[in-house]
Picture 1 (cartoon, helix red, strand yellow):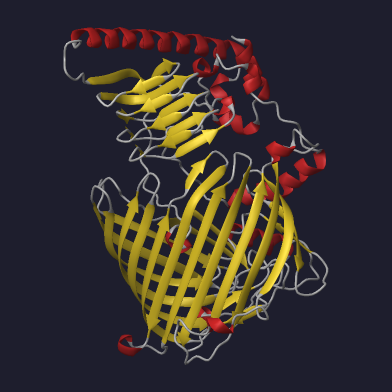
Picture 2 (cartoon, rainbow, N blue to C red):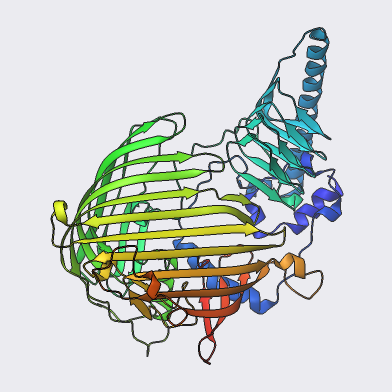
Length: 592
């Protein structure tokens, strides 16, 4: 076994135990390309495990549909077996490359006098491997995955599979297409003109991220549509766990909604059922959709019924983090109400390599009722008390809800780039009947923009307006966690709201060379500003924002230290309007 392989084994981390490395691909990479990361101070490691690992117990499992997933290598735990595996793998790849080269040369000779040459390679293994700069010409089609070592892969033709470049770039020219994923290790992924990548595009800087593509391996199909704007009630985990001041302990089972993009099924069902021990009530929802798959979109029509302990605060605090803060720290960042009824819906979804969208219309009939605080127990801070749960406007609501979401988000290693836009409009009363008459509109715009390999900016602008009856469960609140962190939680409320959040993230890998700084620890500078106020209910939905001015806008500044994957951050925020003590907070998810 080469020295490089031994170095990779020595630098393997716990997460690397879920990867199978392509030893042949990385054997020629210089050892200096495999970074040896400095160890974190013991107190940071301890802090990380105390704060992050509990979150993983309630995190939803993400079964990646892509080829470059992490597989278990426990079976390769000893040197003898690894050596045998490497020898067999090298021999297979070398044989395959030799056969491919001979076939390629023979085809060129046979078609030397042809006006156009059409080439279609079929790999006997799951990957065709090249060394040095490689071009897939317009007349080329490769059935299988492509690996290029020590050079740039240029695609003008068609690759039916995934593409991996090690120590080189992947360039998809105008007219070129990769149907799977494109991953460049120590390189970049570039799409020119109408060049397309069917899966995700990723750029990494560590050779240890190379993944061995096993013979006979086929990526699993994905029936997911993971977007920031989706209702968490449609995507429950298989095992449901909640802990809050209203339900107390909630346990149940669920099945998430699936999107059959390939048309393999036409009926998609989802639902959940569980028991709230403090309320002594069963909670459930059940949905059924008829789906129609086309070449570029998925259409559906369906119905759903529910009896839920619901909240409007999903955008403020994610469920998993709220469970932990309630259970451990006596802080519940959500407010709750009972919502019982049913809905009819029609929707259109698209999912391209760099663009996803949703357009959906629902007709809802719901009965709303208030809930009170039922418990006041937490593992720590026993002298602290949960907030009272606020009352809502009770009655029957008949409404039409339209939602639209657009996303161009792409992942590039530890970076995310693109836009995420969501908007909703709900109208109740008049010809729809019910006890309420209102129109509510919300828009949420987010931009994630890398500035370089080592820094990026994230921006969110969110606005809301409520016309007609003032209904607490349809109004807006800001302040505190993930909105204005230097202020009290939900300190400002009303029927008009605007919020802006900005953060600059500096990757620890840049600072480790200049300072004694852990490479896995990011530095984050942030600024927040927003206002929520009550205007006369007779004003139209677009009026009333003129009342928001420099006197009503509240703002703060601060900084945070965060883990490289943004799984937690320790922050410090200061108000800008008055002199006040620093607000210290610990978050287990990014604020937006």
